[in-house]
Image (cartoon, rainbow, N blue to C red; front, side, top):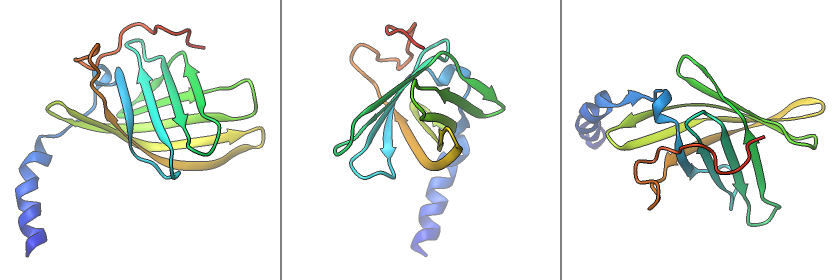
Length: 145
């Protein structure tokens, strides 16, 4: 009975949630949940859809990847990250918004020279910063590659 009451109370709010649109992506996104213990993720998406994806680990070397662009297919945001080494990432994300709250979720696919070798779930929330109150990132301040 308790679950039914909670569901009934949450349903109107969920009905107001909408799918993210192109203008909703720019900003700083931080991990809500990660599958690797001790990891923190940050995704910065700029207005031209270039981006920086960071994976900070407590026990391993941190990783930082840059992408010049992203592709939007219907409600999916697809970002590919190439490195000078053998590791490549592809983020395939979707999300929703409810008033000021936004969330991105999906899968982080990992590739090496042999092809795809792993895929991990990813969940990111928007992060408001003092110099970025609207959470809309402008032109990249770092050189995207």
